[in-house]
Length: 120
Image (tube, rainbow, N blue to C red; front, side):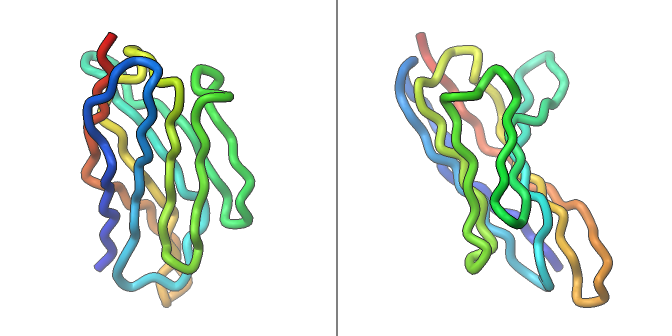
């Protein structure tokens, strides 16, 4: 009933930029927090950035000053602008959102993931 579809991943050289998008669709009354996670090979999935419905962002220390999370509530979409990319940013990036249904219950949904590869 609800889908999160990510786009924007790819291969970029160190110091470059990428912009990820994640659009939610389906039976959605509202969306609470929207988040970006990443998982590098052999590592645990980590929370990279989060943004409240009101637009308040928060970041893991390793991306502060380089990544910017934003959202468009009218489009049910969250973005992650990634600048000054480093090889250690290489990972599969996943969006996750707390979506409230028309029955006013909140469920967590995940996107399918998009690969970001930063070459040195």
